[in-house]
Length: 386
Image (tube, rainbow, N blue to C red; front, side, top):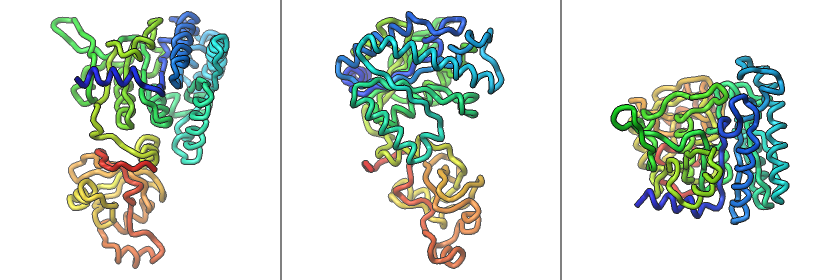
């Protein structure tokens, strides 16, 4: 059965990214909970001794900084949030590092934001650093760089960051630890039951989730499902589970039926290749290209690059080299890719054949708007490994 096969994948996973939500790490006042953090350290240490490589993605920095700064609750203004993150991060790291040191395990702090992972050189540097730490038996502890982030601290969440990290390091499994034991489905009356396994995430599954439940946290079940789906597309199995239990990680990675396991066994819909991961997951599209039926068929079935002749509409303002969405005339998402042209140039050449493009922009330009190597389809069939 697919369910048991995925639980077996958790049992044999060698490289694991584990995200701990704010409500797992702090008490009701926002202070770090030493009992919970000790349980996390104990379990992760056991996993490392088993021969696994573990990356921790830790929330809680803002929550941990509330009490030292005299905030009764999570503030709304950006400066206060960044102050709390700066103070709280030192509390969390000290608690982690001191406890891991007693287990004979070193830790390394990694602060990331979206720009770090979007820029190709910085992306590769972050990847190489994380992989180097794992090879040395170090446990990297990752958090969003809230002190310098703007959009991230207001709109982001560490579920999304954890998913990006799992893609970055080619993780076998992503564990999203929260204060509930997985996704709940309604029964009769007010009763619910735990959903043990989901092969994929769709509208039906998203309809089961509610809003976030705590002023200390920024994420909710919907963001966890989205993060799980992203990790699945890159090849990792995902699990949403209750991280407050003292043995939840060990039970989950022993293949026991805890939480909600998410992912398919088959490669259908999986995006392969590190460069295509970078394009698909680490960029926010800057614009949109609408293509005609002929171009859609050439992209989906013919393995072709996108040419200007097949573009009917250009939306947004963006420079050369930006990631843009590709959509059909009916609005369906086909994929995304790196544009060889700015939006201004595309407005002038859309719908035109290659010989006309050369006359308009000159012979030195490419005649392909998005080269196949820089194109990621919604359903990938290639097996590239660049």
